[in-house]
Amino acid sequence: MVAPLDWDKLRIFHAAAEAGSFTHAAQTLHLSQSAISRQVSALEQDVGVPLFHRHARGLILTEQGETLYRTAHDVLMKLENVRSKLAESKEKPTGRLRVTTTVGLGSGWLIERIQEFVELYPDIQLQLILDNEELDLTMRHADCAIRLRQPQQPDLIQRRLFTVHMHVYASAGYVSKYGKLNSIDEIDQHRVVTFGEPAPSYLTGLNWLEIAGRTDGSSRIPALQVNNLLSIRRAVQRGV
Image (cartoon, rainbow, N blue to C red; front, side, top):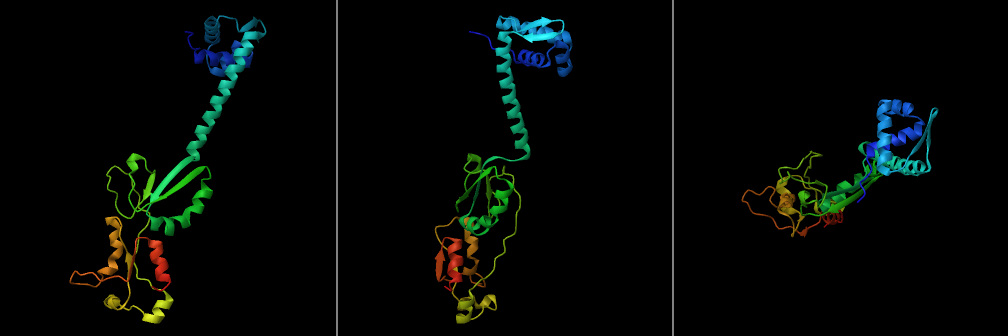
């Protein structure tokens, strides 16, 4: 089995070929002239052929040296290209980013704010995974998550993005027909649309209207239940 060529020797050989002399190569690489000469001689022994014609005025590549130089040059250029891309990747993110959140939050809030991100990071392939069930980030089902509660996994890094406020809404048509809700005590005189099953337990807090104002612990019966926030909003807009 042929032993692989020593990369340091190849790098020094390439520098000598580019410079045309051991002296100039030594200045470029910040090495001594004798160190350059020794490494090139060792490489010639490794490949079994002379790589330079040595003259008083400098170095001239042999035919075999030309072949090795072209190959070494191609490899160096490819490595430099990779190095540049790696350096750019530190400043400019690239690749795929998978973001998971609930169906309602993703469709009603996040999707409205995606355009700026896409324009700012054109080299990122963004994938939104909308699911009311919490995906396991440790299993790489997604890269990051936007959630409506504290994460259950203690090792996750978290950042607070915003505060969610709960309000009562009705369409203008509904208010015109059934009147305006003036206080929490008047809810029983109105129709209520709430979040329905099946739903993860952490989303049941969205149904606070079912018990708002009740002191006996009982729940009022909603006129409609839907397990999708966008459909709930649409139903309210239609005056249900």
